[in-house]
Length: 249
Image (cartoon, rainbow, N blue to C red):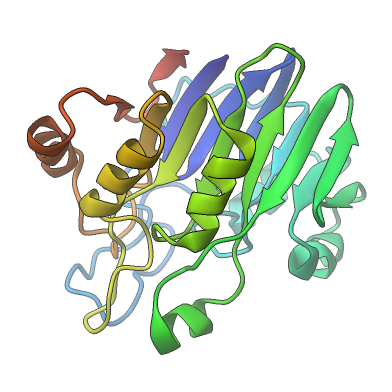
């Protein structure tokens, strides 16, 4: 399996000879306003899209949830509207209204072009903040003898994540880290401790941690995560890719 990480939660994975673009956020640096009520008031995204990004060989789009840092207006303008787009049920109408003509809802599972997609649940934070953030999904992608890939999506470590690992036994787990948060309340994406819990739950899996240093409400850096895992999970196989990095897993 190949993974081309672009930035934040935007990446391309190649599974079964299909190139899937996840959560396309394609705006130029600083083109969108900052998330309010956080310490960092910089405009988003914080970093540019890597120049090596090749979006011409995409076979389909997968969107975990329809928030601006996972699908933006630039993506709606730049990407072909006849590409298959896989999403959670609640987001179908929004993508259709944006002009996409092949919006495929993944309720529980779906077969497409030799791939099997399963939708998983998650919790985008705790308490009232988590409820306000709305429903989010993860996706498991499987194809024959290819590695089983679990993209957890914007979620903290929770029952739904544990159940997905137990049910699908993923070879690769892509976690959205960053410990994104507001001035009050708990993180709404995985913290360093959450990534450590994923490592403990799936000791034989390869973990890829993304969703850091590109959006103003993310507080966990790559270096902080790497230092933490070095001390607490030294035997784990964890990749923390740089923007634009290509991984062969």
